[in-house]
Image 1 (cartoon, rainbow, N blue to C red):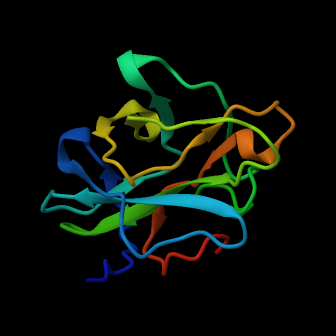
Image 2 (image 1 turned 180 degrees about the vertical axis):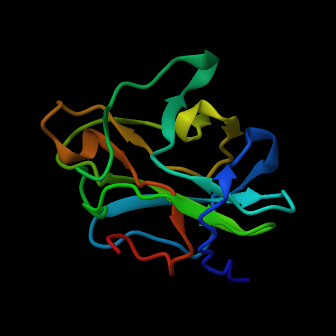
Length: 166
């Protein structure tokens, strides 16, 4: 079900209470050697609303231990270099964002996150997602220069076809 592009210049910022999250979505995947997770952000409101920016993410392991990795936005590998733009989400429509990391190379060890904390742009809503086995991807424990230790987040975008870099 497509969420039509909306050009309502009067749309106000989305209230956090109007948002829900669906994901990780099946059928969206990375290209080359990266791994990707896509989440759909739903506007449950009867009104158009707008969002702009990057979600902030944080992975946690057992016992709420935080994972160490380099965060990136569009400067990270395999994401568009376009800066975020204002996205107007139709009433009962949706937008999406992606989280990407490249494959760990060499002999690095990995840790599998159990929880993902997603803070929407502007801090308007925080979602805490418990990751089931097979969801998410291992976080590399490589040195800071290895692409595998960079986790990048796309800006909020309107519908796409799951292709990174567009």
